[in-house]
Amino acid sequence: MNETAAADQAHAWHPFTQHADWCALGHEPLVLVEGEGAVLRDSAGREYLDGNSSIWTNLHGHRHPRIDAAIRAQLDRVAHTSFLGFTHPPAAQLARELVALWPTDSLTRVFFSDDGSTAIEVALKMAAQFWQQSGQPQRTHFVAFTGAYHGDTMGASSLGGIATFHDRFAAWQFPVHHVADMDELTALTTGANPKSEILNPKSVAAVVIEPLIQGAAGMRLWPRGMLAALRSWCDTHGVLLILDEVMTGFGRTGTMFACEQEGVIPDFIALAKGLTGGYLPLAATLTTERIFAAFLGGPERTLYYGHSYTANQLGCAAALASLAIFREENVLARLRDQIAHFTTLLAGLRALPHVADIRQCGFIAGIELRQESGASFPPEALTGARVCLAARKHGLLTRPIRDVVVLMPPYCITDAQLARAVEAVELAIAEVK
Image (cartoon, rainbow, N blue to C red; front, side, top):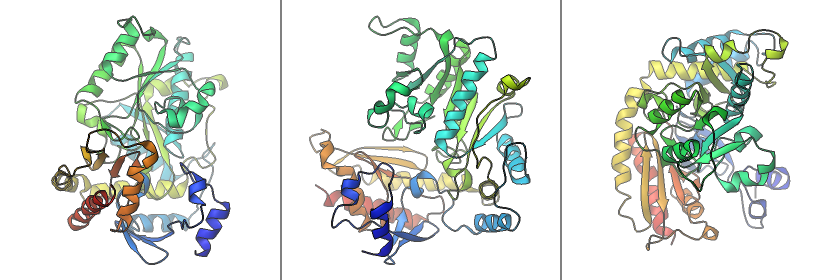
């Protein structure tokens, strides 16, 4: 075992990881040391395709010259200064460019934070305080969806609909009501289901959803038109709409933002992951002038929320470079052909005995594995994890969501590399019985 792996097992604590297995005798962690384009290299010199964009973050590939240069140029000025009571050119320019991605006078204000969880957290706090300062303090409840995952900070965790991640901390969470779909939301707020609780819409501060597709639910697709219907419901009842585009934003679904595909503009949108091209932690919560105006006045109306590294200059420089790549390299136009090619390649997996479903939304795919009988594999079998481990031998790195193998590569991946990634999944499935 090399020195890095030994030090890691002795001292590091990894997220979503059972360390009885990680630190077990004979387990040697994969040590990643280099990357270029869609390829990562380990400490032994082996190469792998980055099949999940380093946990859904990397858009344009590793060591993209435009982003590298932007970060180096910013380092020649300053790496970080406080955003509390000061500003700086990269943050001001980035705020302007993010607002310019939306129709005029829609989302006009940008609050920077660190990651997807905090982007959602600040949206929840803004929504709650907005109603307190707008004469409707009874609006204290939130609505989220079954199978949702919106992050791990306490407010964001409250929204989660996956018991494994969230139930342990239920005693400390915000008042959140979970519904499976629009029918359940309507029943909850009208009393149409006599066996269900009744929630007065006038007590709801906001509804939160990942548009088009739920990530941690196993890449579960929403029905077409559902997002537009939800926007209409919110408008009817005066409820705020928070969109979590941490995963879906910046082209993942084929458009810059997923909500564009149903013509929806939210009251808040949370952005992170791909914001910096996958280089540095940075998040943004965009909202409207109506929300912003409610916080103007005396000190008691101030939003008392912030982070030490809010609007970090290096992160903002990387994000500006990423947006420039979208413009100058015609990323979204190229993605249309890549998505079509991806669809064709994935179709070849449907005939495999253990492939129960393939769910695709743009450049995101979830390949669901089941027994040939159609039954789920036992959780203790760790089938999805074993398939992903087997895929390493064929040059692919990715992680599953239970027994759903995720493929979400960087946009720089070539057609040949994409074909190799899908082939690696096929070979791995065949090896794991």
